[in-house]
Image (cartoon, rainbow, N blue to C red; front, top):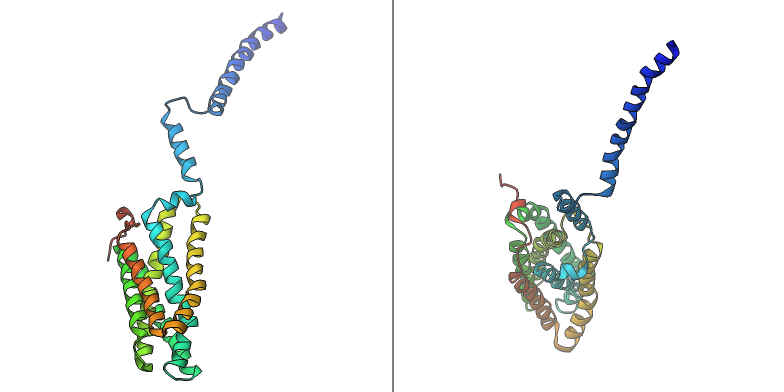
Length: 254
C-alpha cells in the first residue's frame, strides 16, 4: 500500500516533466526553421549577407570615382613611376650633359618631395575629401613634367623634379583611399583593388616605351609634354567624378 501511494505521488511529477522538455525543444525548432516571412530580422540578415559578398569589378566600374582612379592610376604610373626612372636620367645625361651622379640627384629630390607630401596629406584627405588632393596633385605633377622638358638647366631640372614629387605625393594616398572608399569597410574587394594596381603597372610599363619613342622621334620636350598632358587629363577626369569620402565619415578637425 505504501509503495502504491509513493508511485501515485511520483507519476504526476514525471508527467509534468514531459511537457516541459517538449516545450523547451520548440524554440530550438523554431529558430532552426528561420525567421517568419515579414520578420524584419530576416531582412537584416539578408542585408548583412549581401554586405559580406566580395565586390565585383563590374559593380565597382559603375562608380565614377573608381573609373577616375583607374585612369588616374595609369597616368600616375606613367608620369611618376615609369618616365621618372627611365627618361629623367637620360634627359640629364644627353640634354643637360651632366654625369651619372647628377642624373641620380633627380631621382633623389623627386623622392624627397614625394615623402614630404605623403607624410602630411593623409589626415587632410580624411577631413576635406579625396578629390581636392588628387586634382591638385595631378595638376602639379603634370605642369612640372611639361615645363621640365623645356629647361636645359640642372638647377631648374632638380627643382622641377622635386615639385613633381610633391604632386605625386599629394595624389597617391588620396587616390588609394578613394579606391578603398568605393570598396567599403564591410566587403572584400581583392579583384577591384588588383585592377587598380594593374592600371598603375600598365602606365609604368608602357610609359617609358612610348615616351622613349617620342624622345627619339621628336625630342625630349615632346616626350615630357605628352606625359604631363596625360597627368593633367587625369586631373580633369577626377573633376567630373564624385567625391568618394562620405561626409558622415569625415572626422572633426582640431
